[in-house]
Image (tube, rainbow, N blue to C red; front, side, top):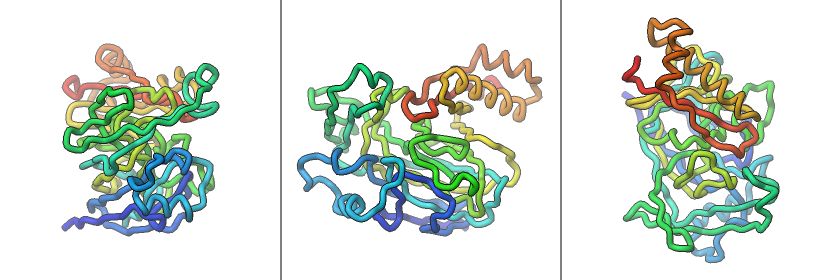
Length: 312
């Protein structure tokens, strides 16, 4: 029987700004167990609203007590999954995700974003969250429907890489900022360490493809994941699917190379799931696959391809 576990959002259950295979696990689970975890927004004291009464006390404690690494992201974990060994795949079923705060922030920050040379009037706003109506309300009155997800979902990086800053997504997943990784989606991640060492954080209330100004609606989120060790899958790169689509993921400093990787990965997975040749799978991707810009701002830019399963 699978068990359910929960990790609170506290300074004792998180790291700030990095992913590291030497971080002691905060929880140990069996393959197939579900884990509900909570997280704080990325950022620091400079991104907090003036009204500190609406800031969770545990968030303020984390800001005061934790040592920040190379990035701004609060990340919950790691979770040790029994039986996982290097070379395995961790199947991450995203079961739920909801905004847990009454506010979030959006920022324009120095030297960051898609147009850093053009936007130098730096600013942070704090949209309010209406939980009943499931919208965020911009300061000028526009309402945007919430579509929450975790910007960071990862296994720990290979030990040889040491401590990796949280901003750049890599083969272990990490800061992919992919809004398609919402409830109902399954993400497959390579395992580089015993126990897999699963992390998640960087809550986003809603984000457009591209995340062009550097932030989504950065906010606290809570979510539930089912973590399953797969010995029958041999992957070296993140891949995902939902009920209707396969999703390949490309990450590179160059968007062209990210697009090439997303296409290459989709061809590989289509061939693995069908009797199609590489040529046939490539042609299918050209007719039915849709390349989208995931994000433009995380060092390694992202492209993902969505291919309807109906065509398999």
